[in-house]
Length: 167
Image (cartoon, rainbow, N blue to C red; front, top):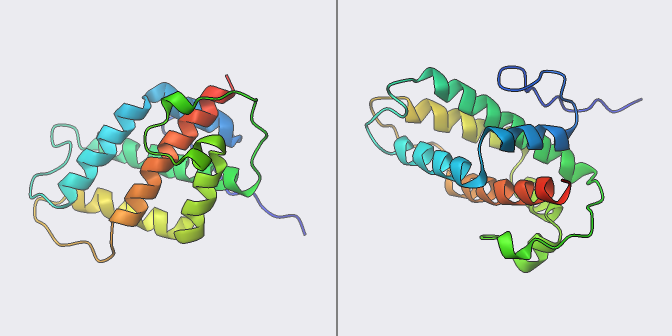
């Protein structure tokens, strides 16, 4: 029986025909750079704990942010299962939060992340972040947010390295 590939679901924010995780990551970073996504993720997480509503002037944008991050996590999940060979380029100078071994093998970041946190748990983390960041009142998250946040931050950096190495 043939194993079904996890769909990337780029429908609302990118070309819906993208089926390659590398092409999805390329499209993802064409929409914003690493610092943009890190700032977005930081602001989103801060609003989980604040009574202010995230992106109050245009909350519809939060839905697109959620879809982008969800597709990003799915692409990383697919890449950790069968990583494509990387060109022999060293981008160690551009790394910020990755360990030396992770900067030499960015796919290791994905394997570690999904070894500790399932795809379903990442999905729940994103949904819960969006839900709580849009609420004008604050309920504390029911699960710890720090581990998925740290892994997602590192996955952003590893993914950017992979995209840069394949240019």
